[in-house]
Image (cartoon, rainbow, N blue to C red; front, top):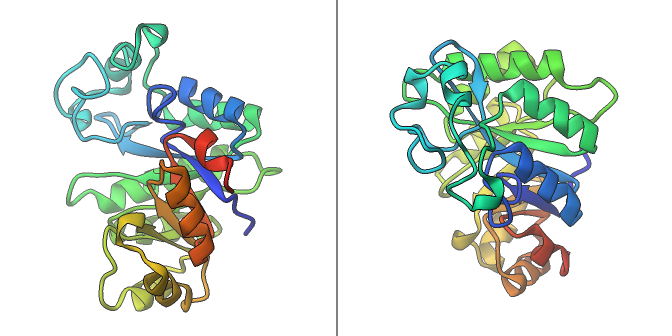
Length: 242
């Protein structure tokens, strides 16, 4: 699996509103080849691009994402909070995101978010949409989640889609779980890593991707340690040392 050294985090989260089509266009203009974004189920079972389980931070709406339909969520403004330049930007559906990514020639890391107890539904739904809508002539996206149940469900629904093992911290026994889920990459918080920690993680023999790296010198250091790729809110800054 060919992975870029720099992946735009939530599009390019410091350059345009996160998890929006405008963010993907900004990332492409900055020169990235892949973006990362989050998906969540809404009330009607459709998937929308939102990081939080509530709407307040990144839209002019309120309440839980899971309590609103796609139509209700797409009536909200998802750009004005960032700047007036992006006023009127909508929350995209997963299908809309895939269509634009294909047009821009961007690859993707799709992080599956969900409420506790909904791992299977979220994992299956995400994998189903990706398997049906992602262009067959493009390298498939990488599916990740902090909830192993999401990845297990995605694997059962569409085993051909590549999966990555995402950790907030390095947990005991992570290698066995990573292997059981058939993951092809390892993802970790860069704040936990020094040279020795990177070496330990790399012994698994899988590409190591780390989040979220916004400082040029830290990116340079991590690449020197042997990290294979970084997620960044300012990919243009990190690309300078990649």
